Length: 429
Image (cartoon, rainbow, N blue to C red; front, side):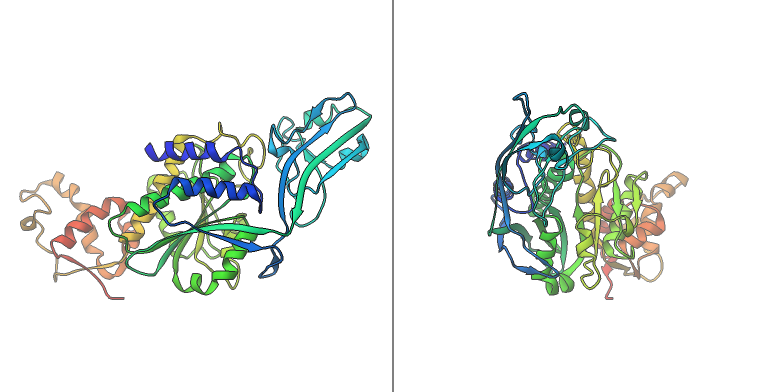
């Protein structure tokens, strides 16, 4: 549980920060993330306002200092400094007195979840607004209200970061998450915390077959920006990609497949979840909603799936004040790390193996099976024998795992022994 504890601790540092798709909250978030892994190069990029990124443009940079509403009776409500979900993100500055009728046109609520503050934003249309619990909204009295938003929209830049951990090959496994939501623990803090812990794990490996690229950027516009600057490289180098989001709760696991569900990423994540967490939720690409939309868009076609615990748009706490630090847990974060560690290990071993003998090899003299056999020892060594039976050079390790119904992580030590005994070699394909 050590990784889960570290990840939860990082989430507590990230949670209070007011993040948006641009601004100082994003930069503060990256400073914290960089401080977690000072031993790993973490490259930062700033992309100026107005830059064309495919069909979009980088918007103005937004920063906010304070916001609140003063009631006719003099009470302060919707205080940004108490909960940054109270502000409509990207609100323009305002300092004026309005009627209750006008104020209501600028307040977002969730009548179906009346005690929760919703998260709302207006990135590409200038307006001002607040968010509040519906039960507080219906108590507002007639009168004049003073609305105050101390924010700034200016030419600035969009911030994103990437980590490259090289391996023996320039073929890459790609991980992404985002850094653009305010104080929501599962929807925002869990993804970057998992990225950081995976970077630690990958950096600790004595040998890596693949290179690993981990990218953190604002959702949608950040992914579009990254793709626009790196599309040829992504298409020629990335063999499997995973968007990591909403990975901190204790509910089941979820996969959102690529457009056609036929990539290596689909195959390996589904294999891990099927064997270890059989009650996982399986969603096709029509249920997409995060940055897999951009990486899997027509013409982009990066082989990406999304991995979550409770999927975005599905769990009731999503985009509300209920997505807090009590909703995520050490065990939930640890579980997500364990899944992705299994995915990495499977990818590192996934190749087409071919047995080097003609006919079944004699395993006993190599110490691979007991030299005295009965029906018990036969069952205990069946996985090894089935692994050999399907190692004809046409199947990769994940295929064999699916054929013989044995998890890849159980086959990995058997692979090591068979290679050591020179009974297995990598097949040319």
